[in-house]
Image 1 (cartoon, rainbow, N blue to C red):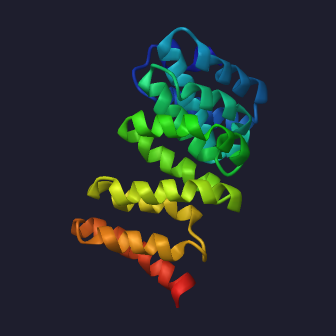
Image 2 (image 1 turned 45 degrees about the vertical axis):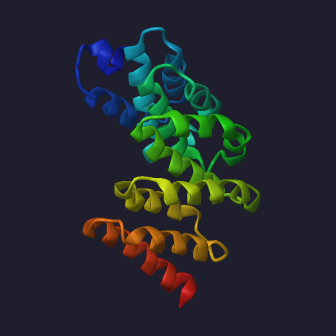
Image 3 (image 1 turned 45 degrees about the horizontal axis):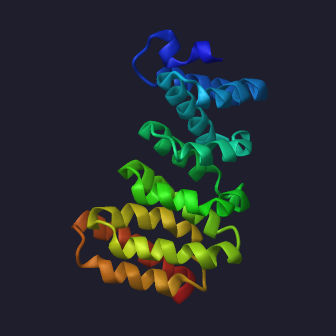
Length: 210
């Protein structure tokens, strides 16, 4: 499968990697996916980068096909290769609901990557937090305050998108807290950002306040 990666083909875009992901999904080629997962540790950085791309593209469509590699993705969060870090966080965001315990057991590593990571790493870490928090009360008790703290302090332009990502873990018990943070941040937002937040406020009002 490595020979089908963009780097191996000498192609300077992601199209071959996406095509390979679609092929592996269509054929449910578990051995092929294993080979791509092994490529995360390839000493050639370009190949490792292509492999993480293939895996999270699979995860976007069929998360069950990559869930067994959660440990590999968690390990990659400490990579010196920024592309690998945000790619691994992206992959984890696709499977957080399938592997909540394994991710929760390594929450310190996820939080460290979230605190030190790029914008894309942070974006996807919110999806990881929400996916795990939504999977059980014991996870929510620890992780929901992290999400709320983030929404209180993140840049105004991030509030809308990150609130949408976090909404997966909002429920009848925590909706009031979530709602209050959105209202607290609302005045500092641009009009398009307010519209995104207002949609979530409306959902909360319809589902739990009405």
